[in-house]
Image (cartoon, rainbow over all chains, first blue to last red; front, side):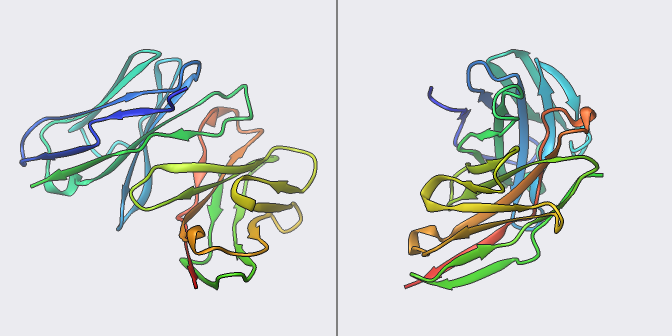
Length: 115
Length: 117
């Protein structure tokens, strides 16, 4: 398996623009997680899905952030409009609860810079 | 509520010496415990886990961790540190009994390990 795939790996955009981050989880995994990592705040869970259904979005910072999972093999995290304080590394992770009791496998991350 | 504490922001070790990265947890029921490592500009990589059974768990790259239920700890250890072990280490927990969290893990804030030659 190729592991969790994220695209793009790097994104530089101007304040006010829409940003879409993409994630393909490991085939067969039934959970998908979006995290944000910054030096100041560390690793933050934004939202997670189970079988394509959002379970907990309490970590989503504000209404500018939205996430979807239209099918088991694809998820997006959208920021509209983007702001400089959104600059961070965004990670997607997936897991299968029934096997190994839920260790998560992380993608390589998308480094977002908003100028 | 579930929580994880990594009391040290940074651990410094000389190459060849043993290393320990500390982790304590709090859950209502029995824990599933995990260690992850993050190298610069990379995602988190799964190192090892404790589910049940033997309290000493062995994982990747020569790391091991000891589950201590009475002290609610799950410290990461390695007998002989390498410079290449320098990275950020995260401890995580999930409560076996906390049905509402389902697949979610609670991560600690991370400990930066620095191994000097």
